[in-house]
Image (cartoon, rainbow, N blue to C red):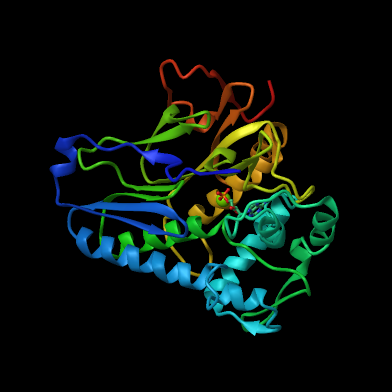
Length: 353
Ligand code: AMP
Ligand code: MG
C-alpha cells in the first residue's frame, strides 16, 4: 500500500526578488495542523504579526486537534457529556452546524469515526467493511451534536467530531485578525491549502495564487489575481492511499461513507477578506474551508446550483475529472489559465444559459 500526502495545494506564487526585498519582509515557515504553513508580512507591524500568527495557529491546534488527547475536541470525543467548551469552540461548532445544514450534510464534522475507519487519522490505511461503515454512519449527522447554553456541548453516544475540514480556515480568519491588529497592510498566508492574501503585494499589484493541477503536482490549472481575499482548495489529490490499484482519498461523502466520487478533482472557493473580525462569528476563511470540502462532495451540478442559489458570498473554481476548469463569473477577470494546462475553460454565470 502506498500513501501520499501533498502539502502544497493551492500556492501563493513567490513574489519577484524586488518585491520581496521592499518594505521589511518578515516570513515564517512552520508545520502545524498536519501541513506546511507560511506567513509572510510586510512593513510596520510585520515582525510581531508573523510571530503572533504562528503562536495563534499552535494555540488553535491544541484546542481543536482530535489527535491531541488533551484538546477540547478529544475530550468531547472521549464522551465527556455536557462539557463546557468555551465560547470560541462553541461558535465554531455552531458555524460547522450551519454549513452542514446549508450543504445538506455534504459538510459534516460528525464524519470523524468514518475518517478514522479509513485510517486517515492514524496513517494506517484500510478499506473498511460495509457493515462497519453502516454502523458508524448511524451516528453521523449534525442532529447528533447538541449546542446548549453557557457553551455546553453534548455529543450523542457513538458520535465524534473532526474539524479537519474547517480548522485551517478558522485559523486563517484568526491570523487575519492578528494582521489587522498589528496594522499590517500587505501579507500572504498559506495554511496548507488555505490561502489568505491581505491588501496587495508591496509593489501595489495583486497577489498571484496558483490553483494546483490535481493531475500534476508541479503544474497549475490557472492563476488567480487576488487582493484581500481567502482562497481555499480541497482536492482528492491532497491526501490519499492506493490499494489494489484503486485510489482512496480523505474527503468522505457522508451519504455513503466512501471517499466522494463526484467527478470533481478539486474545488477552490474564494471570498473577500473579513472587514471586521468578530470572535463570535467565524469569518470567510472558515466559510471557504467548509464549502470547498462540501462542494467537492456535491459534484459539479449541485455545486453550481448551490452557488447560484446565492445564499453565501463566494466564488469558485471547479476542476473536473473529464478535463474542464469551471470559473464563476465573479472570478472571470481574475483567473488566467496556464498555457498548455490542457484543461477546457468554461465560465459559470448566475443564471443557467
Ligand atoms: P479539506 O481538506 O478542508 O477538504 O478537509 C478534509 C478533511 O476534513 C479530512 O481530512 C477529514 O479530516 C475531514 N472530512 C472528510 N470528509 C468530510 C466531510 N464530508 N465533511 C467535513 N469534514 C470532512
Ligand atoms: Mg475544508
